[in-house]
Amino acid sequence: MDEKTQVASLSVVSNALLTTAKIGVGIISGSVSILSEGIHSGLDLVAAFIALFAVKESGKPADSCHAYGHGKIENVSGTIEAGLIFLAAIMIIVEAVQKIQGIINGGGYVSEIGLKLGLFVMGISALMNIIVSRRLMKVAKQTDSVALEADALHLRTDVVTSGGVLLGLLMIKLTGWTIIDPIIAFGVALMIIRAAIDLTKKAFAPLVDVSLPDEEREIIAEVLHLHSDEFVEFHKLRTRKAGAERHVDLHLVVAKFTPLVDVHELCDRIENEINEKLSVTHVLIHAEPCSSRDEECPVDDKTAPVCQRCEFERLDRREE
Image (tube, rainbow, N blue to C red; front, side, top):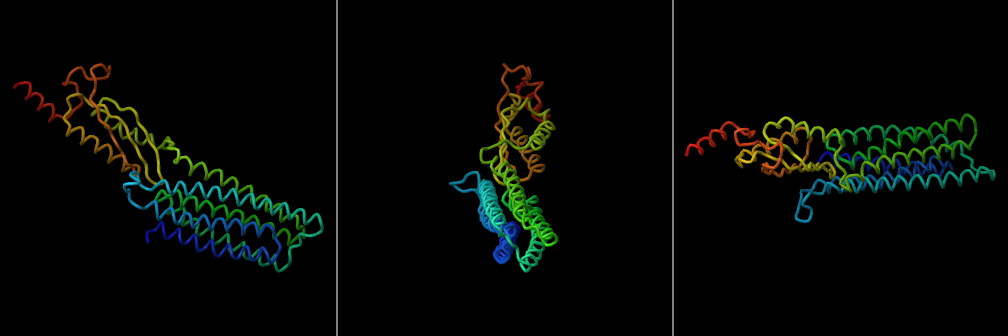
């Protein structure tokens, strides 16, 4: 089992334990904020299962049906997880509204034992999620995994919301104002919605082949600039991402009489250097000869930016 699968499995186990504990305490105590946290963790559990499936599938090599690999499975996973977060927020808001109506009608009581259990469970939840989310985010950054990053963001949101519920329960214990409970639940829902919007932007963009970020395109341009004396110009640079994999293709214009072997070696150097700076990058370079109709094209083969060995070879051909 690789590291990505291990941390995804850890997330499943921790979410299962926390979901059971929160929903149980929420039902016992009658606290809608604790119950809303249970719902949130329940959807986090579903998301953790999706992330586990995604990291397993995305690691499979390319095949005849998926020539570009399975990387986009992680983006699909992240988009589904964002949808689940939105669903959690809606369910929490509904529960909070019902709780407010109950308080207005003279209900909404949170038992003393429920408060104590709630404080304990929220504290344990925040601590566990801090530990697991840090582990998930560390591996997500190392492997550039969208699915694991989405799962880590879920748990980080859970840390904040658990802390909010914990604070609300303390205030109820000190003041006796049960109205604080649904107000905290509304706050939880708003934080969840914000996290869902951020996750949707990150996960969905690669599904429609959005270009790589500006800083990554600049890295590609810098590598090309380092070899600018070996070719005439480049154009049609295109980039996209699928899961942790980056795809780059471009047209490289070389001097008309440059030997094929030198063009191939140049392309290999460019591809390897891009891969050194941007891991898991597939680079495809289409080399084409410079046209005499281009203003930047060398006037003759003497000015062509090619290696010294090739220059000697052309001199030998002229003498013949």
